[in-house]
Image (cartoon, rainbow, N blue to C red; front, top):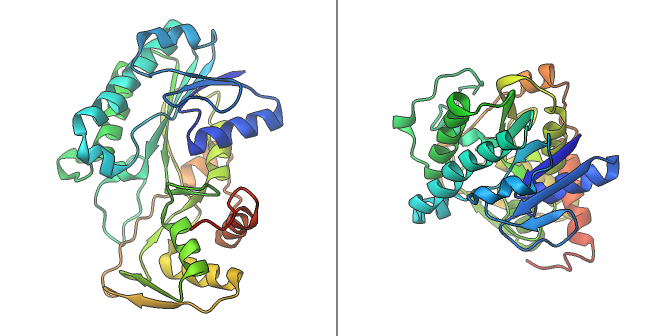
Length: 297
């Protein structure tokens, strides 16, 4: 089976290509950025000509998107053009090349504002009128467009949790706090109890590969096994760096907790995250200690 990956030069795209090489899976792709390695070409997902780049019958993994909410808020028209129009064009190109499946990278943010005691599951109705994130809105619109208008045998929507892992920039809260524990004696946060189901990039890649060969329209949360608090990230990071770090909370009584459940993916995809917090931060430390990072902050 051949994979055709959009956003092949992204953080997740590069990790996916590395895993494919390791396991002998043929993967090619496109990205708006100039490719750094083989198997990828520079192209715009809105270009109808991308169908010529998709191998016949390939499984399409659609990662490309404007993914930072600040960028979507600054240019909502551009965000919708790329995240929605681009998705429709990718789906049309996949259909033209007789792809059996389109795997669509969505986000836990499509659940909108949630209560701290709420668990987010895939079959929960979503009220888009309550959304405050332009990025989330582009993703839920993309999902719905694929649900009602994509004439492929299978569309598999993967709602990613907040992804972290070894990378030099564009960090999530995990990498930012890990680096702060390395460089600062005092870290200021809102509430140490704020928590997310953070997920290591390697577990995201495993989930993408596990979702191949599905049929029909399906949605899966790909998230960590349990919420991880900001306080736990700081404490575990400080221990790894062998430092004492003081946590200063500016709003300790108002934590924000998001809890997208991954039970459906674990059961139906036979997938299981391998990285708990300790293993994930140890992987970050190897990266920070290595020659690629060289102590940058």
